[in-house]
Structures are given as C-alpha cells and as structure tokens.
Length: 317
Ligand SMILES: NC(=O)c1ccc[n+]([C@@H]2O[C@H](COP(=O)([O-])OP(=O)(O)OC[C@H]3O[C@@H](n4cnc5c(N)ncnc54)[C@H](OP(=O)(O)O)[C@@H]3O)[C@@H](O)[C@H]2O)c1
Image (cartoon, rainbow, N blue to C red; front, side, top):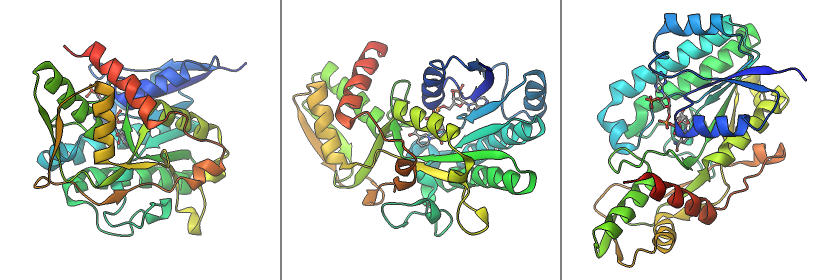
C-alpha cells in the first residue's frame, strides 16, 4: 500500500487534534506536524523551506487565529493579518511544492449576516458581513478564493470546508475569548465549585444555533478529501470550491443551557441577560451537498456534550 505524507497545519488546535486522531487510524497515512515554535506559519521563507524539506502529498490547513465575538471585535488587526499570512504561506507553498490535495478550513461565520436560512454554499459574498468579525471573515474568504484561483489558473486540487459552530476536547474554555459551549461549561463549573445559586447567560436564550462535535467534522474532512473533486467544482465558471459541514440540527441557547445544566448537575437557576448581545435569531447550514455525498454526523448534541464535559472536568483545575 502506498503511504502518503499528510501535513496537518495547526495540529495543537481543537480541529487539528481531531484531524490527527482521525488520520492516525489510517495505515496509509504518515502524519507530518510542526510546532509553532519551530515553524511560525506567518513566516513565508520558513514555510517554503518546510515544504521543500518534506515531501508532502496532502495538507489539512487548520491553523488560524480563532476566537469568539469579544476577541474578534477587540483584535481585528491581529485576526486579519495572521489569518491572511498563515493561509497565504501554506497554500502558496503547497502550490510550489506540488502538493496533490489541500483542504482549507473556512467557517460558517463568514457567510453574510442576513443570508437566507439554512445557509447554502452559494450565499458566500452575497451580502454584508457581521461587523464584529469582518476582519476574520475577509481573511477567510480570501483563503477560499486563493484555493479557487489556484485551481482555475494552475489546476490545483485545493478544496475548502465551511464548518458550523464546533465544540470538543481542547476547545478554548476562556469565558472572555471562547465560543458559547466552552464558555458555558466554564461558567457551570465555576458556579458549582463556588456554590453559586445562578449562572448568567448572555442574551434572551431564544436565538437558535447549530453545533457539531469536532470528531464529526474530522470525519467529514477525511470523507471530502476522498471524494472526486467534482463535489467542489460546480456552478457557473466553477466558482464554488467549498462544502458546508454541519449537524443539520439547531437548538436555542436556552435549550443548550438547560441540557448543560442537566449534564453538569448544576442545581441553581439560569438567568438570561437580555441586555447583552446575542447575534442573528437563527443560524444553520444547508448540508444537503455533503449528505448527498454519503457523509452524515454520528454524534448527537447530548452525547457530545457529555463527553466534552467529562473531558473538561478532568483537564480543569
Ligand atoms: N472552533 C470552531 O467553532 C470553528 C468553527 C468553524 C470553523 N473553524 C475553523 O477551524 C480552524 C481551526 O480552528 P480551531 O477551533 O481548531 O482553532 P484553535 O484551537 O485556536 O487552533 C488553531 C491552531 O492554529 C495554530 N496557529 C495559529 N497561528 C499560527 C502560526 N502563525 N503558526 C503556526 N500555528 C499557528 C494555533 O497554535 P497556537 O495555539 O500555538 O497559537 C492553534 O494550534 C480555523 O480555520 C477555524 O476558522 C473553527
């Protein structure tokens, strides 16, 4: 069996770790990773040298500067600069290094703020972006367009996925910078430890969101890499190189908080603070393309949250 060299960029992140866990199950994969201290992906010369020194067949590009609303809104310069640099260096080096396939991680939060629900792939660039994460979104859209452009000009098999909100082990549990699930787990954990009688949750609790366990995302990424590249090239002038990946199920933040209350066995009350921002009322991806290609999620929200809660408790102090 021919062994392929697969580079996972961002292997210490939540998505990168899940990709590595999934790839390690494949005996034809020789995994290549590099620590940030040895290879800062914003450094073009170093990245080109790394690709020259390793015979890389496939790349999963999961390195990025990622954060919640607060971090995106506070550090827009860092978000746009670092993401543009990392993805440009990796994608261009994959091109000149003759990498056979590359998968770039986009995100559902780069679709227009008022896109029709559920959001389909062709909604990209059809409207204004969410202002709080515009810098991040512009960088990520540029990454998708880099992949598309290298395909159109050089015939490269560079693809992108658009994951919905993810959660899993090694998520960012910092309540100021993290996403809703890890931030809520952190709050419940703190409230239980300090015997608090309530947990405050930002917003009315009525907005609806879709969540996917990161191991389901990893299985979708590997599945999509195996697919014929026609999945990624459809529509007028082949201008659509990304595929949505979600769970297909949404829930309100209130339902999410109640599920977490039951999993964590927190006995206090939930206080919804309607004066805090909460974003668009509904956000869900149309995942019919990937379903048609034979992939489906396998981890229910409840069982995913239970395993992540156990993981978090065993890793928190
Ligand atoms: N998390 C989600 O809910 C979500 C949803 C949709 C899409 N995505 C996409 O999935 C991808 C990965 O997200 P994630 O949640 O796994 O983020 P993460 O946990 O923050 O991981 C990102 C990784 O990239 C590395 N990295 C950043 N800048 C780097 C640089 N200059 N050189 C080398 N490594 C660098 C980070 O290393 P350090 O930790 O050392 O900085 C980190 O290990 C992103 O493209 C994101 O847009 C995530």
